[in-house]
Image (cartoon, rainbow, N blue to C red; front, side, top):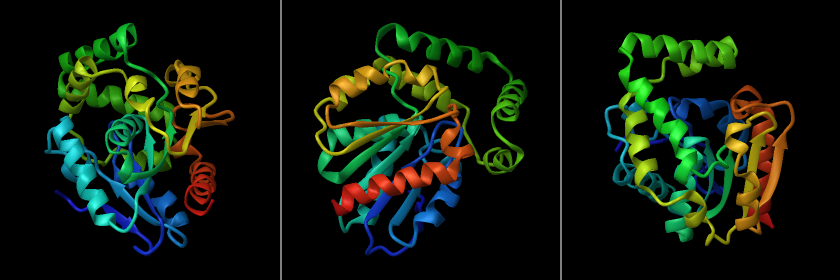
Amino acid sequence: MQAPSTFGDRRNPPILFLHGIRLGSAIWSEHAQRLASRYYVVALDLPGHGSVADLTFTEENVRAALADAIERIARRPALLVGYSLGGFVAMRHAARFPEQTAGLLLADCTLDFEGWRAWPYLAGVQFAQMLPARWLDAFVHAGFVMTLPASWRAIVEPIPFSRDVFAQTAAIVASSRNALAEIATYRKPVLIVNGEYDFVFRVDERRFMHRLPQARLRIMRGADHTGPLRRSGEFTAIVEEFAQQVFHA
């Protein structure tokens, strides 16, 4: 397993960052550098992305990647910061191995793929799989142009990525229990951070808050799904404020 990127002193409280689909650990460099004076920051490439683009995105491989990263942290449970796909990964891991976490920050992932909610994603994946590679690349590039400034596109677009991840995540969505059923038993601190205009991934926001009574909600005003990237300074400040509560309360 490829070693994750690390920042700061291992003796400090650990924060583990998990990226979204078609991204990679490189998106967290700016955030990590801002946090490294007070925290030990670990940024992991999920299977099918970045340094492990050739690794199949399966539950077994995802679990092994997180276990390896957490073993490297070792000294104490980490605060998991999961964005989009990384948020769903963080939820599942925390629900199954709560003793390995100090808390959860879930960014732009309050959507439960139970029942009809999975259909648009599964249909989108089918469409992506039908496109020739160059067409899919052009489609993804157009999406980046519409949603990210040039400085962020320069970071994101070179990240290696396996297009098979779309189908592999769809298979997990189609076969898994719903996210709320799994995470409802989690009792450690939770902060939900959503962009004000991230309408798709806010669909089940209230249901998440209801099922996680200890959770708090933070809305990034004027932001969409790309808020943690486009407004990295603001998002990092939110992470740091929550980390202080988790580790120093």
